[in-house]
Image (cartoon, rainbow, N blue to C red; front, side, top):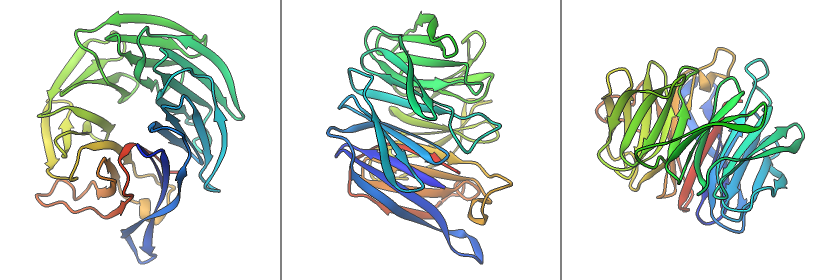
Length: 316
């Protein structure tokens, strides 16, 4: 498993999660594999899939990385403003290599790239006042975006055009698909679950403070982190808190990644893990089988001494 984190100090960080000994699959080490100033301005977004990662910064540039060689392999300069969100689409039949990279920026545009090789295919004008976040449907045929114009939009990635846009009662900062039938949106401290067919709200959850990141777990759980410095697991069926890791970090939580168990993975990936990153510069790994206990301790951690802004992971 590989983690990629971006920082306010313009550094990109790469980490490998491995077991320390072959006799124990639960003793893990979070080992740095690279770090260098890849942008000339703060990094706002990262994405990873298979052996490829990407980062977007306020320098309007997308950087591409080969995780197998821990090297930067190119830049994409198709946006005219800060790159705020990145997402790879990977075909389920070929999970080792991403098919497309989708990016969004403060210029209000969404860009579609072929990921092999990285070629710009289409730019779609979606929002008037910048895009805060994007989510790609599991089918890869469409994407949702939320903008600073307080609108939710749907983009047809096959035809390269905006299909739908509606104004919301408040500006959302995060959108994420939980499945083909459901997606989630975050607006300040409120998390809402929506039916993917008609965008109707089916559940609402309210955190104590502003939510800055979410990650979809198994069994209907949604993990959230933010300004309260905690990691909260929400039961999306009931809208109630399943459990919480209080004081998970000493500063606000800026990124969460769930690594789901796979039958064809290495021994150290035989159970589900949750990775969290904070603006205190610390990245921690949690065992999801133990995190619900009263005093949960991280399996591994690494201190970057940077103000981390985003986190992404690849299990391949």
